[in-house]
Image (cartoon, rainbow, N blue to C red; front, top):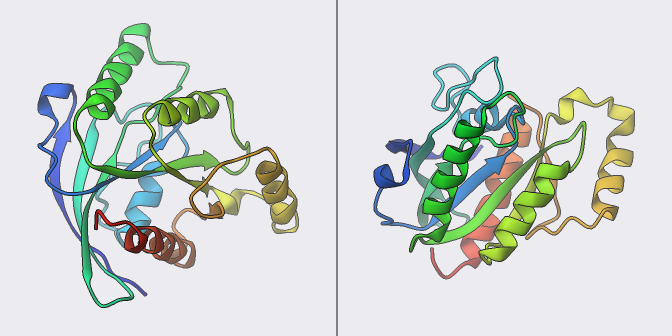
Length: 208
């Protein structure tokens, strides 16, 4: 199993708190309650002592969190990059002011001179792409940011229906750097699959 070393760089609630871009960045984005924090903890091998805060209430994570990652590549080199955990979007219970703060933070982040290598767009496998996911796709396209589609909560779908769900979503026209992959919460095997897929992209990019 691939082991990624990590350290917390910064937690930012507004644009003025964003750290200086000192390394390539891979940004994780998804709707509130998509399971982003659980996936990041699994990705970093921290299922017990958690790095990303997991809340029982959607929309509670309101900061952008930056983690320096050192990942050994298959070529023998250690790839260093920043994993950026953006707050979830689209939770209906949030007030107008909170949503405005999200877009302000996102605007600061994506409009700055950052070295964003690609985005990991998380989609709940039970529901497939929703309206907010379409908005995010347009947002990323407008900033010319490549994306990797990752489905979460694959363990919440009956095994016998996984293939049908996957094929339906892919036929819908999802655009992804690699074929979309399905993850399953705290499942180590699915986290390892995501690590390997990310490293495959990273090793193809000159930025690394």
